[in-house]
Length: 76
Image (tube, rainbow, N blue to C red; front, top):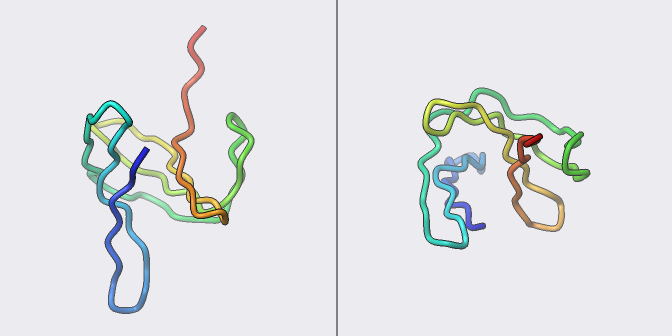
């Protein structure tokens, strides 16, 4: 997964787009929250962005190893 990020003059990082390995690209419509947190579903930790993408809220994480991941929803 590739994340396109924009930086403010103060250095604040704001993710803008997510591109999946298959080439599908999604714009992040809104960032509702940004905080340090652990992923209870995926088992990682880092900066958690609560993002609205295509009308739904998703957690996007930026880990200290410079990698991004989206917390997946359980499908049962």
